[in-house]
Amino acid sequence: MTLHIDADTVLEPLAVHHAEPLFQLVEANRAHLRSWLTWVDHMQSPGHFERFIKGAQERAAARQESSFLLIYKNEIAGRAGIYQLDHQNQTGALGYWLGAAFQGKGLVSSACRRLLAHGFEELQLNRLEIRCGTGNLKSKAVPERLGFTLEGIVRQGEKLHDSFIDLFLFSLLKEEWQAAG
Image 1 (tube, rainbow, N blue to C red):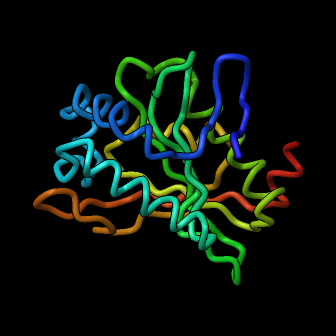
Image 2 (image 1 turned 45 degrees about the vertical axis):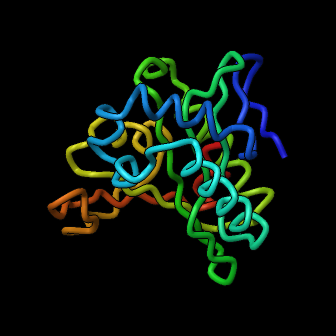
């Protein structure tokens, strides 16, 4: 199901035909994305993306994630979704990334607003989290802008290349989202 954001922007489910353009976006933004994303080095061909997309489709069918391509003016700008879905506890984690040329347009914030509605209304979640590196100030601004609560720092919560980094842990509860409505 495609999630509409505005006239120029949609969140579109991944399909195998996206493998080549997604690879091209990552290839053009490799240094930019590698700063905070561990998977970039492992994605070296359209075939790697095709396998990734098939895995994402399987996880979506198993209700383990709800992930999308972020399409802006008919061009793939990045990805956004709800991952680590735990239906028993009604929780999930928002994740996102953009190509450098698409930053500064409010795309991630708009996509996350739409994903909040998707998560709380359609997926019936109660809590959504965002984790981001403590040095990633652009990523940190997103949950701050959307009214998330900073719960703390997950010390050495992620291995990024050859070292561990600390992560900010933000959360938003359904009742908080509804009250801000």
